[in-house]
Image (tube, rainbow, N blue to C red; front, side, top):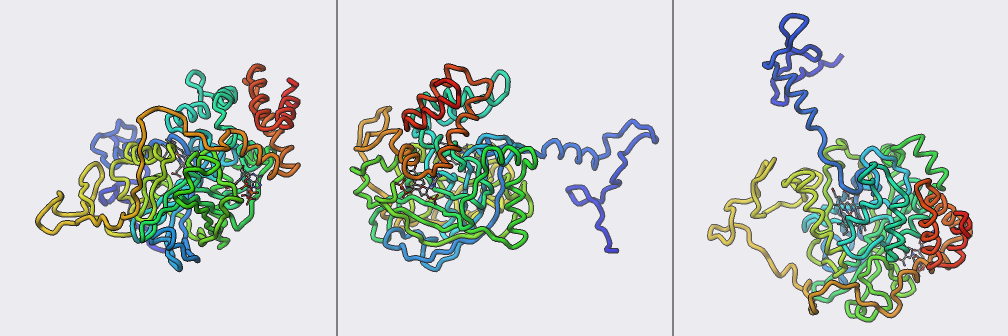
Length: 482
Ligand code: NDP
Ligand code: HEM
């Protein structure tokens, strides 16, 4: 038998007992001087950090990105150099459910990647859909409130969800996706990922392009039907997290192709759709996908809390060669994520191993709760003692001219901008007959919840009629209001 280590306090002092508190006589009372037991109880009370306000339930794994094509004509980002390999961490999640909720609920899936590049961490914090429900960050908290729980009863409420969606026609494209069987993916391995937003790429000569990322599953798309998803929810609430873990454990490493759509910088101004509107895709006939590499997930985390629960992704983590676009949602997200991490995990979340870059940090930030090292001395700039100095040439090319009146407004409409034209294309040209039938029955199932009022059912049918009359008719019939 191997020798067992001696239990200790968290300070390394040998523990007096694994089962008995220190008491006055065998029948108590207990003594304050039992530091070991008091530490155990106090530490237990502090085991949880707040769960993510959205995307609370998830799982993740480490992997490797390999770039196979030369894209230096579009971006100087070092991670996209041909032949380069970069370590990454990917976290999948549902959006609306809490930490203990079922993996198989109908919901978009988060697809958040942290690339540990040689120029610092680059995060692409996307979903398994190329679009989103809204196009202005001022509506985000309202949208999420409508999907989570009521303030009075603390229940989820489909009437509330449809109230928000039907009053927000820009949601139509994403809700169509959500209500197809892609809203209930079979596993995380069997779905695509998308950067969703448009990003800026600039090359060494300062030439600029707009780019969208598509991560295409090499496992093939597989979905649950609504019935299968519901059955799995009852059988195993952790089905997706378990599937990913066991697949990696048995050496069945899932992989995704890395594809991009690239738009010349100047083409954005008069493109037929506003290319920065997150409720729109760029049709492939205009901008085909180009494969530039692939990534594979090959290593499970060893400590869920340290590596997955405390992982902090941030769309503002951009490296030289990549910048944000004027997409208003992306601009809002640049603020939101580091703000929530400072609250949820603490101001020094970037020092945790899963969040820390694999390159040396030479920042002039210092101190704060749980900081265990400062990165530089002196701790101020400018200084005359040889402290770190910025190199602005790394960011040459990122700037571009913007001017305009300060106002609150919808986006400028481009020639074909309309909330229904792209979901209509999905219904008319992409979905199979089975996909269409399941879309109708999934909507009907969702809008048939007992709390959905008759008035709301009419609004739901009108919402879908805007996309296509057959779709609206199918929904109205299913809801018994035609
Ligand atoms: P394409 O026919 O070139 O592309 C259609 C896309 O839809 C493909 O990416 C396909 O990729 C994906 N797709 C196939 N089946 C489904 C499904 N059941 N649910 C969701 N997506 C599906 O046409 P366009 O580029 O002109 O786009 C037409 C419509 O397709 C768009 O309005 C949008 O709704 C949808 N779409 C477009 C994407 C884009 O970036 N252009 C991306 C995804 C969807 P795959 O089968 O590999 O998923
Ligand atoms: C998580 C805000 C839009 C994808 C989060 C979190 C916040 C947030 C506060 C919790 C982060 C944490 O605690 O770690 C917002 C705001 C948005 C927005 C304000 C719009 C203005 C989007 C969009 C996408 C997205 C458009 C995808 C395209 C994600 C993902 C996570 C997340 C994947 C989970 C990250 C992880 O795995 O840790 N979001 N979000 N969000 N969001 Fe958003």
